[in-house]
Image (cartoon, rainbow, N blue to C red):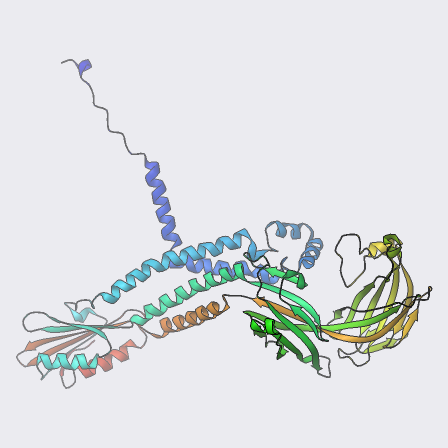
Length: 534
């Protein structure tokens, strides 16, 4: 047969290595992700990623402060904004670390739990053939039989997991272990950490928090919707249509101060109703103080602070009166010097153009304890000892009909600059004093009311966070205190008695095990003649 006529068999097609390489890469990635070292690194990164949330203003808490920070820091501020450093807890990178930590903990704990359950069912390991090679070893000859030695060993090792075995030639041995709760504490610690991660994530989804200012004159606030709040921060799954219903009435407020002006205590007398009380109209009293929230309807109501609200009565030329009490905001937290704007429409004016020409704004400063330097007014103490106001009365278009939101504490300065809002009077007033305008309108400063700043917090996972936190501490303490120990006892019959060998091994922390083993071995070979020591 010629060479040309011989058919050469084609080699079998090799399996493309791409698929195996991808599987190997995925397998190694999963192993790396689910290692305990990776979980610890991710936990550290999560703590590190949370630091900008504490150091930088956050848009969810104070959007104007964020805008001010960006404007003050130029390109650096804008770069941080693009990197979501002003929305840390809603950022992509923080969520990615959070999710990876969750996956790492799950992937790490599941196999460890299965392995731990298997080890609990297993018997202690066989007694090593040569106990003298162990770190701790004692050998002695005693004048007792093998059964007596074994009985004394079982009595001494009560509370240990042990098994007794026959080894031929009349030799018997005991394998004993203790300290399995160490791994239990370790698993409890990590499962509690996993539960804490899940609870905090669910809390971010179903919690909400809002703040509202309520006058301390019997005014009420009802948790019926987001419109009742001054600021409202809902969770990802909260739309504000299904809030827990309750009402709070603020009857009075009292504050005490040190001589330096530092606040000593805040107390608000409130009444509340929730559940069946809403139908019956029953009000329940409560003394609301700082760090002592009112808990009702699954929500917590905190007292954050307080301030003052001046009451003005405006008498128009036709004799009609308008009285308004609006909160003013503190600009000096030490003396509670406050600023604000009380805005009024003249009653009875139906023509929109004419109404925009006759709107009034009373703006300026309120001092709870007024101190005058000439015509300039300041506050010398935060308590309401000598109240006074320094006000400008503006008349014209306040922009209330423009369809744009504006601060209740100030007027739109652009309207003043355009001449649509003009100052018609300026005066320092004490309660009961008034100022006359050029058209005969009088503005009287009547009194000062107090307001309280309430915060309503709802977190359905708060109890679980507490439980997991306590379990985390308990698991960590258990894993640190309890130590893994192993002991083997072998009794071999001899012509002169029974040769007893005791060997010990510390599975984890070796500190202190030498003394513990010496005491244990001394009891097990009591009265013996030492042949070898550790």
